[in-house]
Image (cartoon, rainbow, N blue to C red):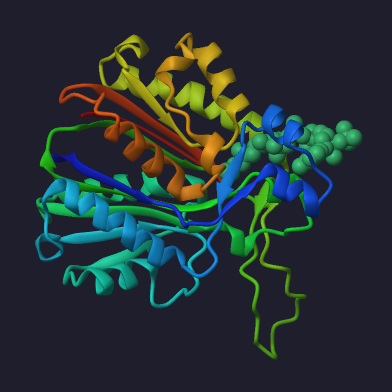
Length: 317
Ligand code: UT7
């Protein structure tokens, strides 16, 4: 037994920051950001935590699914940027929803939502749950160095959610980790121990953009090929790929290498930037709400990011 997705939701905070707004405070331009990354604007939270945004996305997903919070057997939240470590983002969302089920967070950076989905699949496989809520929610703006133009122009805030129920929709998946801190690193910041003998590093995103770019193109391409084959399908059977929205050029390279037209890749990076673990569920919700997904459609979701990590799955809608 696996699951099928019966509802999706998303939420972004109200404040929009355009490339032009950023060009007023750091040395960048609308032209550079659009050409090199594909972003025009992003939403930035002024007063909501990742958990609070995740709660609003969850409400939308529950409404679409016609599922009440008390029917949930499990809540998993993927996030690296919640305001508190404890309570977990999942614990806060559980409380705000009024749900009673176990709830916990998963951290695998931008691949987090797909790691969380894969974790949920294990609960379904053991017959432990009938309905689960999986959320990806990020307030990346709180862990960005706003003076570093190589990173601060690419990230944004937001949340996405999916409600899963028992079914046969999770066809194949791969989650992978290539541990190391040389490509992407986000120190956790505070260190109050009088016995700890190392300097505390700022809790900012440190990223080697070009290495991440190469890793992303290679993993998207090889994992989609590997996972579709394992599922007994060909890439031509895929109706849509929902990729992590990190850079439009990464998606264009993957499209070329896979021989899959860009029209099959759902892209919304222009409006939201890179929202880390929230990017895939936000894109999935936007795609779902176009009404273009039909039961039985084959969808690939693929992510990469800090860890380094990557994850890809094939679902039958
Ligand atoms: O979700 C986590 C995973 N993260 C990613 O997937 C990120 C993957 N990497 C990327 O998307 C790209 O590498 C970046 C968008 C981060 C950077 O783009 P790039 O084309 O790799 O730029 P670069 O770092 O090679 O820099 C090229 C030039 C440099 O100037 P010089 O040395 O050639 O004069 C940079 O200083 O662009 C300059 N630059 C900028 N210029 C204007 C870097 N950032 C900016 C900026 N505005 N914001």
